Length: 243
Ligand code: ADP
Ligand code: MG
Image (spheres, rainbow, N blue to C red):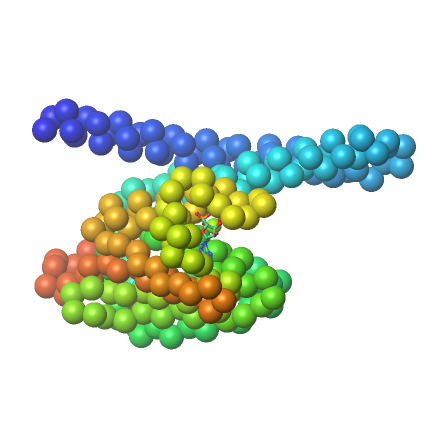
């Protein structure tokens, strides 16, 4: 028991350290990328030099994608569990993905009743939602629709992220969540592994329904925060903000 506690403390320290390292590493990489880009505009480059610079940029981009899929935490995370308003979180997600959706000709539709609550770590929840929305948008190379929905089902909250994209075969669906499984040129294959792990560790699950050519529905199923539980101090503040 004591040993378990020690292990979980160690794990927490390691993940906090990883998050702050990711944050610190992002800035120098952005600077390095900028200088490589500047060098690209030189007129005296040979063809192979141009190729090497382009490769450098795409490798930096790859490293940055790994960081954003794996540890997309603006700051070292505060590992505290909170009551999270689902409509509030989905509103924020819509805001965050708006530019990316627009760039890809994707319209985003939100149908989420207020008042649904779950318990979790806010930044991790945002990371899961962003990973699923990003995948949905990336599955619609010719544009399409992304629906964000949520509903209470018995004692659970079901959050749906539905796209009208390429869809997947059963064989592809079975691969989801395997580390490094990706079908994209610049993919990391980490987004779903991280998302599945987070939701499972909160006692929930992510269901996938997909049909090739017809799009995909990802459903996050989590225990609904019950009203009988003692209210967390943040609860009232959040409710006041979202009503
Ligand atoms: P990445 O996005 O970097 O490839 P993910 O773990 O996020 O890694 O996704 C793994 C793979 O699952 C993707 O490369 C894609 O093949 C498939 N996938 C995930 N979401 C969808 C979706 N909404 N529609 C179609 N395929 C998807
Ligand atoms: Mg992804």
